[in-house]
Length: 409
Image 1 (cartoon, rainbow, N blue to C red):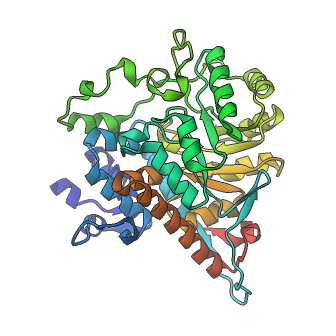
Image 2: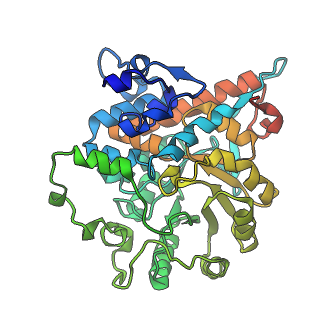
Image 3: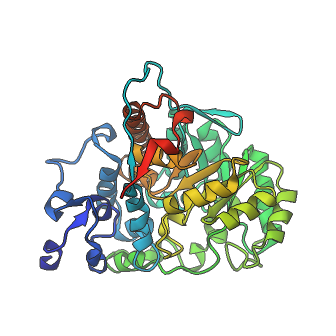
């Protein structure tokens, strides 16, 4: 603790779930600094309801208190030292928002249209696996929150609950994230099941080609005094064994969640099979965006998997302008990774995103207060977005452009 007291970290770094580990302390020096005393200040008492929480980052501390160490480690962890997780947060601070006066803001609206559907705001809940580790109601609680806030929901292939149950709780078409596995027959079975329950988009994740080194998870697991084998064995941790969406499928030949031959030819094969919208998630370069669109993608998601799969040190937000330029307006470009404030959403929209997804924040809200926690996370972000839109003089989402921001320095 003496070592910790000598370090100064930005609020985003501290609240990124990683500064509790000694290995991350040398990362001090970001522009927005706070003493550790300020960063770890807690309210006099734990909030009794989700609507008492002041901002999205505060939900992380509440989730850490509510969860066993290993479960919190799962959602907090990044690859290797987790520097890309931190960069995902910090990248937004590289841009300033230009405030503009003398505007008619009487009819300000955060509404937008995606794939012809009206959205209340450009915010959706992205896919997070194993939500049952954070709350007994798992993805069903998230779906109910999305329903009450009229937010688009993307459900993970690794969801703890059957997709039909999640879709019913949402009460509207949802997006199905896809880990196709390395068995094409299994991929076909998952896609047909998703289309049968009424999903309107298949979201292929392309950033998971092999093993990942989740050091934070490993460190926190060592501090967990529970016996993990009481709940799950090594075999049952495999997504194709534990996840309900694979039930009824022959997974005996599956050895990985994604194929190692995920080539342009694979995209063509998938496009020919998928009947609904096809979105490619995990795009971080203009070259790959161009390939995805050429092979028939209806949309691309700029994402580094929250820094969980790669230690590239490139934030999703850093990659957005390049991908948006390559897309040339032909398809919607989405972004996830590091969204913690309404100002983050605004900046993403300014640099070319059509909408943004949240991963960890929904899990924090779920762990802390269940459905109400997820609802509050969505409410806070939408309120903050509306607030900064007023200051920027942008009364509609469409009016947020590159001229709305300026790169620092």
